Length: 307
Image 1 (cartoon, one colour):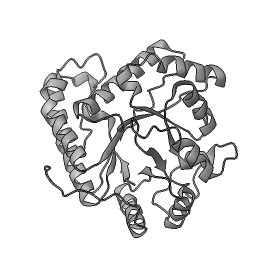
Image 2 (cartoon, one colour):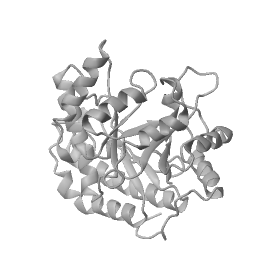
Image 3 (cartoon, rainbow, N blue to C red):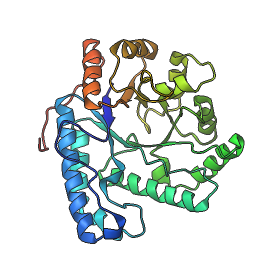
Image 4 (cartoon, rainbow, N blue to C red):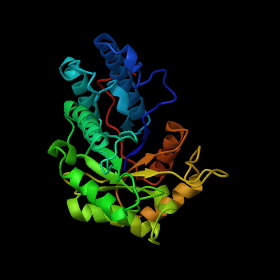
């Protein structure tokens, strides 16, 4: 089992999403930003390995305006060696990474313009994983999208758009059950139609479900992952913030709730992304709990990256 956190390391003094305004675009700015972002990414991954945090969600903004038509800079060739260095490190340390494209990626939108921009964004983010030399167990995570007043049509549009995607994107794409619109059962319908794996979110399932107990829901989602092509199931973990609106993530992991979740998990092998506000702090505590239970993946000897 691997434990991770998304995008930002609050311990280190760097960012993987340095950018600039569209109005001030230049090739020189792209080159500087990508260089800084990839350097920081490697630092974060090396720090994570030292903490035995072997699952990480990479921020979408490694390349500023990576899918925008304005960006004609050949970053794929200019930074091919740097992307490969990151990928080699990930493979050497037996890590797992993912991307979670921003909310504007909506494959079931009635707007063809939004759909096309969504496809281009998925191509861009998937291409970074390709440049790293990573296989299809490293995923692109999205939601089914909007409801638009008609659940059946919304699901149908998602399936139609999914079938338009390049194979390199389809091989990496997973869908997540959400907390308001599309439940695990809706995602299972999409899976049955096109075979897409379901990245299970325990907190979203608590907010929106059809009565499935957590243990059953976990097994239903895990069964959608092909062990060779997809790897073990990825999932997001969080819990409700006290005194906040329904669906707001907690600021810090509650250990009793996490231990209860592990009971529901049973002997399932999953990689867990903690979507908790204090990021690597809670991830480290979760790692400690799992280490005590003998259920944590061990890192290889650290090598090949700056700290």
